[in-house]
Amino acid sequence: MVFRFLTAVLFSAVLSACVSTPENTRPPGVEHCESFFIYVLCISDFDADGQVDYMYFDDTREIFMYADSMLRDLDGVLPLHACAIPMSESTRDLSSQLLYSDDIGLSARLAVKAKLAVSYRAAQPAVDACNTSQNPSSQTPAIEERPFDNDDDWLEEPE
Image (cartoon, rainbow, N blue to C red):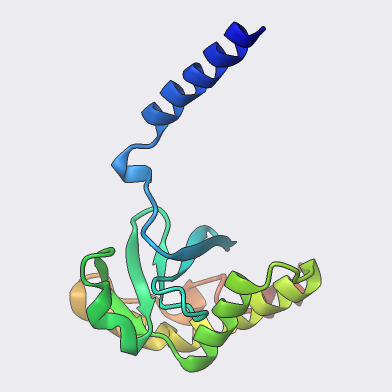
């Protein structure tokens, strides 16, 4: 029986060593990832001071929003996205609620995520302008050509 236990422990240790490749490692600090629409976005408190320091895309591991005060400290953590922008204080406060409120209920979590989505939308013009300047051939389509940008579309009755 002890032999089976030790074999199982050894086997699981070997398997975990195979799974933990550098690509799967998380940056240092306290962090949490959430699904927003089609993306998985991660928030991180690099210095564990109780406030989120940066947000990054889980798939590309690129920082897209950061606390202005932390920019110089994030140099070696993850690469900055070409269009990364400073996060507002309200975005930082909201994301910190997601990170540190373990006892937050589902409805409160959804309310915070909805407020964060509004905050992301407020930052969208700056990101769109940057994306356009980075790649002038791919202009951002007009609102009529972007069917999911009108938040009220889902309320309309089909014709």
